[in-house]
Every structure is written in C-alpha cells, then in structure tokens.
Image 1 (tube, rainbow, N blue to C red):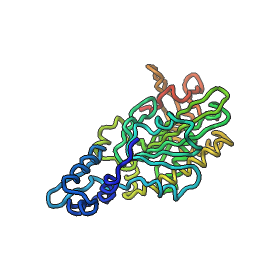
Image 2 (cartoon, rainbow, N blue to C red):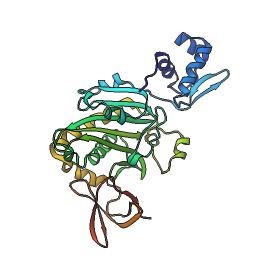
Image 3 (cartoon, rainbow, N blue to C red):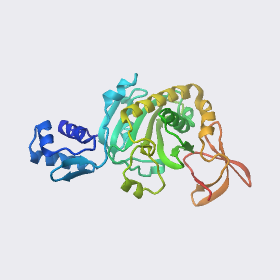
Image 4 (cartoon, rainbow, N blue to C red):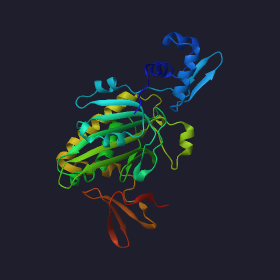
Amino acid sequence: MKQLNSRQQALLSMLADGGFHSGEQIGIALGISRAAISQQIKSLRQLGLEIFSITGKGYRLDTPLQPLNAEIIRSHLHGAPVHTCAVIGSTNQYMMAQLDRWQKGECLLAETQTAGRGRRGRQWHSPFGSQFIMSMYWRLDDGPSAAMGLSLAIGVAVVRALEAQGYQGLSLKWPNDIYMARRKLAGILVEMSAAVGGLCHLVIGVGINLNLPDDVIARLDQPCAHLAEQTAAIDRNKLSAAIIHALRETLALFEQQGLSAFLTEWNRLDMFMQQPVKVLLGDQIIHGTYCGIDGQGNMLLQDGNGIRKFVGGEISLRADS
C-alpha cells in the first residue's frame, strides 16, 4: 500500500481542477525548483495519471480529478474507521491478509489498484482516480452458512445508494454485477475465511466506474458504463460516504433477516427477469427462461426439464441472442 508524499499530494491538488498551471506557479506553491517539478510530474505519471505539458502554458491533467479525502468521508459517517491510499495491489487482498486487525464496517478505499480482481479472477482495470474502489470488513457469528446470498444484498445496497444520488437506469445481473443502461457499471467481490460453525470473516469489495478514459473503455472486453455519463461533476467523497453508509446498514439488516429482506428489491432491479438467457457451465451451454432467484440467492432457470437451480460461482449468465 502506498501513500502520496506531501509534495505529490500538493501537486495533485493543484492539477485536480483540470486547468493549466505554470511551472512558476507550481514552484512557488511547492517551494521547489523546475527540475524538482519535472521529477514530481514524472512520479505522478508513473501512477497512471495523464498529465500534459505545453510550453508557455504549463501542466494540466487530461481529466479533472477529485482526490479521495478520508477526513471528508469520515465527516459524513460514524462508527468504524475509514482509510484511503493512493496505490495498492488489491484492497480485498490487503484486508484478507490481516483479518484480526479490523473492526466491523472498517473500510479501505484506493485511488488505483494494480492487482484488482473481478469474478472468477478476472482483472479489474482501475485508472487512477477514475473509479470507486473499496473493501469493507464484516464478520458473522453464525458461520459461513449465514453469508448465503450476501453478494446479492450488497448489490441492492449499492443501487439504492446510487439511486438516492440521482442515478437512473440501474439494474442487477445475477450474482454480483451492477449495470447502467444494460452495460456493466460495477462489480462486487465477497471473500470469506471461516471454519464450519465458527466465526465467518468477510471482506466485501466494490468497484464502480466513475469516469473512465476513452482508451480504457476501448480495451475492455465487454460494454461498460460509467457514472460520468449522467453527471459531469461527481463528488467522490460524498458518494463514497453514501455507499459506505448504505453497506453498513445493509449488512446489519442482513445479519438479522438474511436475504429475505432484499428479495423484493432484487426482483425490481433484476435485469434478466423472465427473459431468454443462456447459462455457460464449463463447455456446456444451457438455454432457458430466467426466473429470478430463490431465498438462498440461487439462480432459477426454466428449460425443457422444468425449473433448475444454479449456485453462484459455478456459471456465467448471458442474454440469449
């Protein structure tokens, strides 16, 4: 895990507005020489930030950026600590490696991660400052069976938080993806460590596209969406606090009532309800009509053999076209 040093933070704060800042302005503000400015610019570029340099104008970011600020995020919340960092391999892996350290609801947010993972180990692309990247620790006293369907409840919570911020056209794709305008917006990765009948440690990772550069979108292997399509100015810190608050409330309710408290909302948001789909199970392709989920969060598919149940993690679900 890496934090920006004080000069990098100050320089990034200056450039965050997306406007040009001359070398003279930066040198005075940071108290450094022109040569030192070049080194600091280079260090930010190495993090993946696109910084333009034009003679006579100075430096500017390709896209305006609002850096994460843990103090601002915490000011909208109460309870467990919230941490931020600039660069990390994976927020989930970092928290999973030291499970005894965390309080319930404690969070870690990152500007970028270099080894982010989606479902089934897929790479999660994360340009610096362009996504909401967060992991939260939770634990369940009743063991791993109590976590059945948790990722679905988390999906509902994230959509609720985004809808409350004014975002529209959101839907859920079983078991752990969030879509906007039928393109992938966000993913959820829940990891656990537990003994049968014992305490269940959970790390809940959420990644949401905020404002992806065009070249990143072009490299992705599926159509994706980002929140900037609906609003030009995203208050990352306010949005982060809203999502964290929604997740903490959801997890507390899930502990009491399980997935049943979220089934109605899931059905409202389910992208494929009563639509033809195909299920990819290894080399096998199964066609049928998607019938939603059961009380344990399993996917239900109707085909020539009746209604069949599929467990999350073993299959991929796609539109049948």
